[in-house]
Length: 313
Image (cartoon, rainbow, N blue to C red; front, side, top):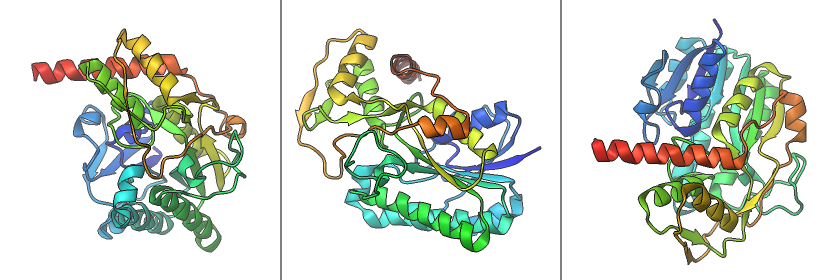
């Protein structure tokens, strides 16, 4: 059976990838330090789990001992705001931690290294929709670390013949997401609407984002294991919505009449983002299967169930 290691596999996106891998008959091992990942996301799954920090060099020997065929690297510090506050921690996790995983992949001679990158590598786009050939100009430490790891992967391919696939995510959202991360606004709105508490919108709310449902991201990761090597593609919906429109759509889905409070725009935030995905559809033989309204309904339902569990807990 084909063996896959998923770093950050107990996290929001990682746990959905693990489920998709199992459905496709892979043997799955998760490495996660549970700083943000949750045991409950994976404790029902037939997998091996190692509680280990990717910033610890010993993770290299651990991975080599497991002899994986593939590595899907999801573990990361995922908050733009946190990266601006503490770029040393961001570097420690996203660059040093990633280099440990890359080193282990080279020593293990894996057939494919799939890396979770981000639209943040582009900074504020000079043209929309953003294509893969768009100039990269990160405007946050988070975006800079993601771009750095991409370049390390390309160099590792040239120097050590490490086959890779880079997936640049747009704003991922869905069940199990917490308030951090690039798609975190959906999780924040979902929690606030479920608890009937007023949410904040930073800036004027006219900033736009390309939201992609987490199950579609999971499918793209699994497909990336078996397509041509050494590629970089977008995992996105190919459409965008303003934060104001997003909030309006979510209030309709939740049957709520809450109104947001507007706050000052945050440093490092990008104004507009939409990632072109036609190339991805062809290369990965993949299309987003969940539209935004369906995805938001599923996310709100998850928040409601979580709230009920907390009240009954």
